Length: 81
Image (tube, rainbow, N blue to C red; front, side, top):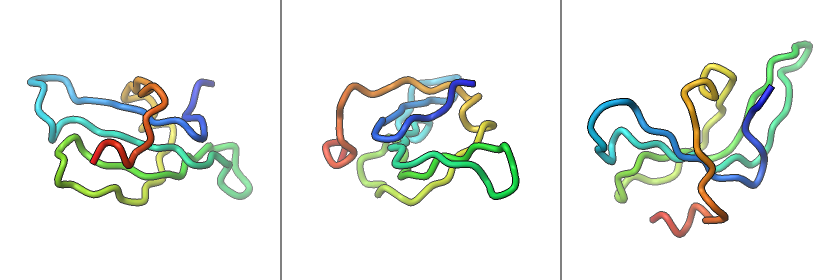
């Protein structure tokens, strides 16, 4: 299964108008399994495309991966401020 990879920043947007509050960035820091389960979870930081919104801690799972994500080329989260 494809899934988030550590040290990678991703971008996703909802269908419809290209509005920054519909954009989402996710910086994956680690991927592991839930205890006693084969369910993957990615830990990292997330934020919308609105510049004033801060990065927040996030844990994303397969249902989130299925929304569709694009890798942001080697751009650290701090440069998206």
